[in-house]
Length: 219
Image (cartoon, rainbow, N blue to C red; front, side, top):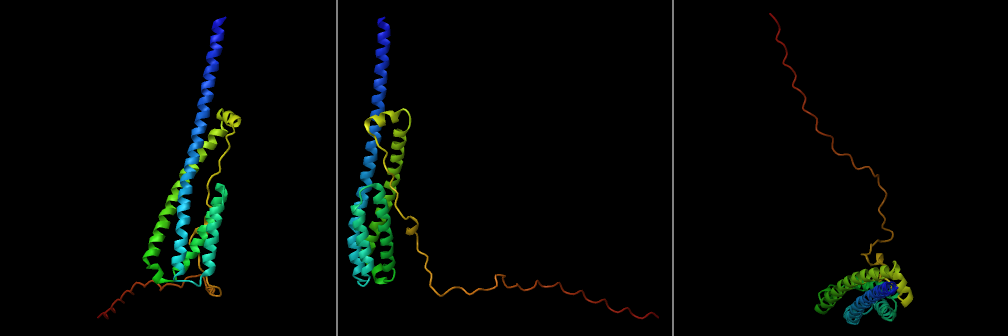
């Protein structure tokens, strides 16, 4: 029965083509993840390259803030040495906190805030932060698509056979710590007062009606 053999061969060929298509699709998705991560690394490196000049500019006006400068330098070194997306995200979060303290120091020096070099560096850093945020969103979306592909049937069979592994998302650590700090002064608590608001002036009363004139005596 040659026609049976033909049918079997056709089915095998179609199955092979389907598996090849699945494999190629996974490869393309994995390559997109790699490309998206490369874009993040470019922006992170640009950010780290701006920091030394920023520190030196602030140091020219606030040389006594040595602890703040050392914290930024150490956080930058830790971020540069991190390897995985999770470790890099945590290190970049610490670096963002250190930069926040550096800018808090700059707020106390009006001449520094008006320095053109400082303003240029600050603008470049803000622009880089925005690029990192956009690149991070693109990367995480790409990772989600790839991870879904290698975990769902039937592509998970191909993924398991050829060693496709899930990729980590890039989440910057300590997001809440990067918000504007709430400043409070010890010993300056507001004294307790009656929570009842002061009574408002009473509503004006309507004017009294004029008295009726006396009735004249009858004659």
